[in-house]
Length: 299
Image 1 (cartoon, rainbow, N blue to C red):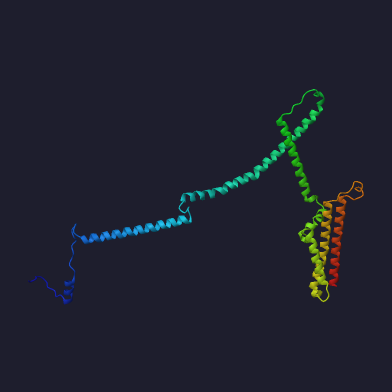
Image 2 (cartoon, rainbow, N blue to C red):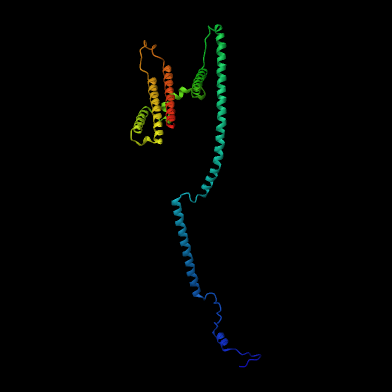
């Protein structure tokens, strides 16, 4: 069969390639492609299986999280708690400020009101005493509320008196050196933890001084000599502490004395003052001895 028109030469390779090309496959009509439907069903089953597997994993993780923390998914509760934690410090700060100033003002106002009522009652008592001769033959009545008010005033006055006594006792400006010496046996700086401990420490210090003063020992050097001086000072201080503890114990629990010999013995205050004077003199003497020994060592 002849072809008309321009005829071009075709190589043998190109001709083979054209022959090897696949034929065009037309789409099948609906109702015919059975193999494609089976493939779609298998894909759908696999997709559902993967979805179920993922849901099971999510449920397992959910259960595990609830076992570790029951409130893991309580988002509303956590949000409310966060808001409460933010608002609570502000409320506490307001209440603390209110209690810090208002309560003091209320206490002062109550104290002034009570003082004014007591002054008014005293004034009424004075006026009543002046007019007692006019109403001697008449009956006097006191109500329960008025009696309760008088009892409260008496109680408040007693509390105020005790409070003033405590303030005067604890006032540092009114204390003297005798209070320092009185508490000397309780001072930890001097190594005092009680009567027994002071005696034990005194024995230990004496033993140390004996070992330091022993001939042929290593205490012949300058450092050991300074330790010897310090131990001697500690012995003096321990002796003073022991004496003060013994005298305080004797003053705190006095022996019963007959009435005839009561005037002969000095008073407790005089004994305490004399003891404090002796302890102060002993401390001063110990300090002087220490300074003298120090100067002798230097020369």
